[in-house]
Length: 321
Image (cartoon, rainbow, N blue to C red; front, side):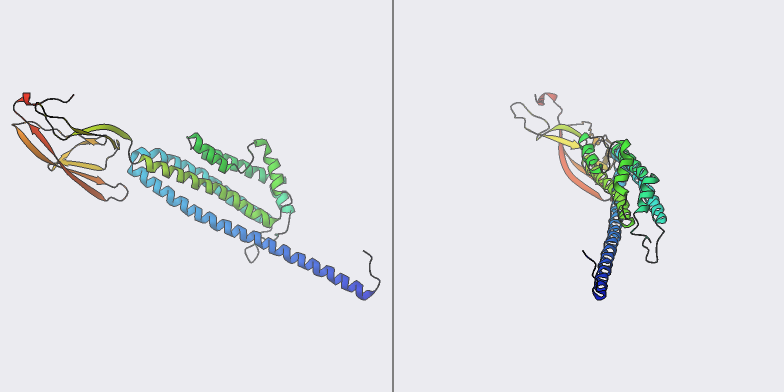
């Protein structure tokens, strides 16, 4: 393209170039502001996830307190929270250090040098902060996965957490590929993203444990039971009984059993009723079982009745085969 000789045309061309440059600067500013808005959105999502995690952890603790057999889940949750909190504190500190390296915040609470690409390169690559981040993320991921015993669960969560390379020698390479010549405005939401990755993993693990607890806090023991319509038989009668598989919680300490108003001791989730025989005849007994909800304290009462029969002449009885 030749340079026009006419001064007027030359001025027009220069003005066009200046206008194009100004438009490019405006677009860049809009893009940079979009990165900051993205960071605000990620931060808000992180806060919401954090609140959800706290409520979930509190619910797990409540269940573990109510049902002693669920205590191992509570211990795992405590280890998960400890590992995650260590990483969150590290990321908050790293982000603050990076913003200070970028000149701090302006009057709008935004980093002053959003376009600068040398600052992220120097901070994360030359000062090895990126490799340090990689190692912290990798160590946190391993600490979380240590709390998972089921191979299928571990494989699923490991896939969700595999955001960074597995080879420890690749930390520097990853840092260079990720942060080299990256604008300050783009690096900030990226840091928030890595924090959210761990927070999302924490949510997934808490949900996993809560689902498993809801299964295990109901029953943990089974026993075949036969209930006869008659407690004794005479010669020529037909024995008939209902057979079913009973399930119960062997660690339950939230039930109270009464027969005819008298409490019956409960051991290993079961109560055994005994009666001394005196005389003959049929006696009806009133059965009441109080079930206390360990979480709410609400008590439900279930009532039924059953018969016992006795006879002076043992020959009248025939044991079922």
